[in-house]
Image (tube, rainbow, N blue to C red; front, side, top):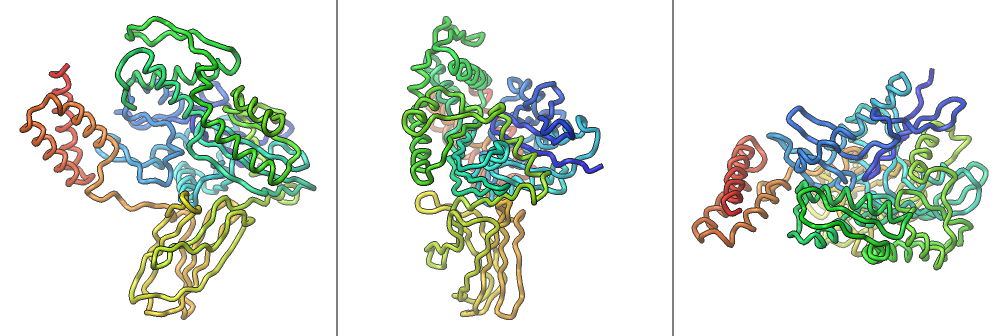
Length: 517
């Protein structure tokens, strides 16, 4: 029996997986809790890692070690405290993908070792490489990566040229795709990594925080987490009704009040306008025949109204908009190449920074994948050197990797080869004048060095903020003593002594907060 490839849509708010079943088409895998969706959340507790519904239900007990939105932090230097050690975004996501694999294996009754993982079109090579590492750490030996709107296009299955807007919780992706004779060609793909539905939840939660008349809540506050959850429910409700009566959580001395759709639309309009402008530009450039919406955010009435007014009447795919991406991923993983040929494109410029810091592009945005480019350089000095790889252009340009190149002679000619495969993963080959080749594999890109001793993990920075809020009621000697302790914690780095110092400092601040109250 050929074991199917698992399609995975690792959403910012919810994750889904799907399998192609003989005679049934693509089937969304139910979670162990009975639903189609699994909350994209992991938590560190005294008994170890938990994920999905278990982590979400325990969020109020462990708000500081329960993490959502980790997909946005892949490929970054983000770190958080887990017991006496520290974890990265990759560490946090591994339990979630492991849970998805285990649920699919229980549903299928067989082991699964291959997956197709969807990522935002705006993901850099560093973020794609990090996503691949997460999947491999979660038990998948074979991993393919596909852009989310491209996967939705495969799920659509019709011929023609169309624009797909994937409005998710964490990111917004827009692709123009043309399909004919089983060949799917992406004409252009772009993304907006910080304009998703979760940002609307945050804006509405801040408004509720203001209305109930209490000081602005911290990110790890249980009440703030409760407001975020309530805001998501209100957002969904306001997509189908003009207003909702909202009752504040227990313990908040504020009577119920109504939240109206116009009030909510006032908060989200800037983000919706921004997305609509990008859709307008691509629509005028390519003149597609249909505008297709996927993702939970596609249900927002304001988005649909502005698109119909300024672009074209939007359509949904012939299935649940939340399941379109994962369906396409499952199809991409199993269909023979002769039945479905996918030609994707590079979503951003790719190159290196020259010795003087100026950008040198090797592959341009819109290049069809797979793509390869070579460029010859002369070494400006003796010995090993660091090569900075960038992605993007203008203000959005960012360095995605610092590659250590082998020793070279001054004025030695070195050939630099960049190749991007159909999954959007980058491989770098450094070819010396004598023919020797040094390669940097895709999954090595984006691995960031450990933070220096001058950097503090997120929890330590949060502790420093709490101390700063106490400072006005402290004497100058107490303020100086606290500042000295934080410098000491920063100097200790992330080892065992750091954990002990952090614990002592946290107990001191908790006691000070108790006295002040």
